[in-house]
Amino acid sequence: MRAVWKGAVTFGLVNVPVKLYSATEDHDVSLHQVHAADGGRIRYQRVCEIDGEVVAYQDIDKAYDDGERTVVITDEDLKALPAERSREIEVVEFVPTEQIDPIMYDKSYYLEPDSASSKAYVLLRETLESTDRTAIVRMALRQKSSLAALRVHGDVLMVQTLRWADEVRAADFKNLGDDVKITDKELALSKQLVESLVADFDPTEFVDEYQQELRTLIAAKLEQGDALDTAATFGGAAEETGGEVIDLMEALRRSIAAKREDTEKRAAAK
Figure 1 (tube, rainbow, N blue to C red):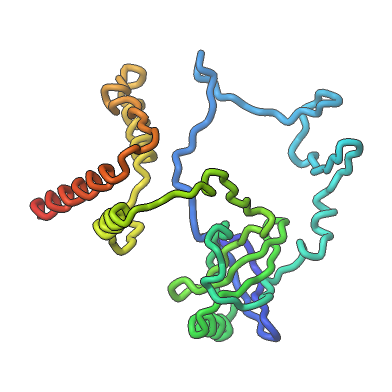
Figure 2 (tube, rainbow, N blue to C red):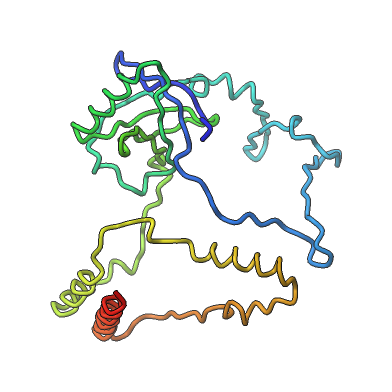
C-alpha cells in the first residue's frame, strides 16, 4: 500500500506520528466509452468557452460564480488556507462509540505508526479500547477539511471521515405518518422469519455477482466476439417483480417455509 498522507495525531500534549493509507479499494471492472459504429475510443477535451481553445490541465484553475460575478481560486490560494496546511489529526473530543450514527461514516483509512518507537501509538490504541470510546478528530485531507472518527480496528488505529451534520438529509416521508396496525400474529411470524435467518456476519461469504458475471461476459466476448449469444449464455434480463404484497401473513408463511426447505436441503447435502 502507498501512504496518501503523513502527519501526526495530537491529543493534549501527546503527539503520535502516523502515515495514512486507504483501507478500501474498488474492484469494479473499468469500462470506457467507444463509438458504436467503429469502436473508436471517445475522448474528452477541456475547451474554453470564450476563445474555443483546448486548455491544458496545468492551466486550469477553480472558480466560484454567484450568478453575477466570478472569482478565480488558484491552487496557491487553497494551499494558503490554515486548515489545508495542517499536518495534524487533532483530537477534539472522545465520545461513546454508539453515539455515532453509521449514516455519518464516509471513507476509511488505516493509520500506521511513523516513528522509531510505537509506544505513543499503542498507548492511544489501548486507551480507546479500555474506555470504549471513539475520538472525534479534525483533519485536512486532499485540500478538504474533514471531521472524522478515530477508532480501533483489530490492532490498528483507523480514521473514518464523517459527513457534516448538514450533509445528512432528513427522512420525511408522509406515508410513515399513517396509523398502521400490526397484529400479534403478523409480528410473531415476522420474528420467526428473522430467527430463521440469524447468523454471524462473515463478509467473505458474499461476492459481487454482477461483477463476476461482467468478467465472465468480457472473457466470453474476447473469445467469441460478436458471435456470442448473450441472451442464451446469461439468460437475458431478469423479470422485474414489484407491487405491494397484499396478503402479508401468507407472504411471511411462504418465506418461513422456503427458508426451512433451504435449510433441509443444505443439511442433506452435508
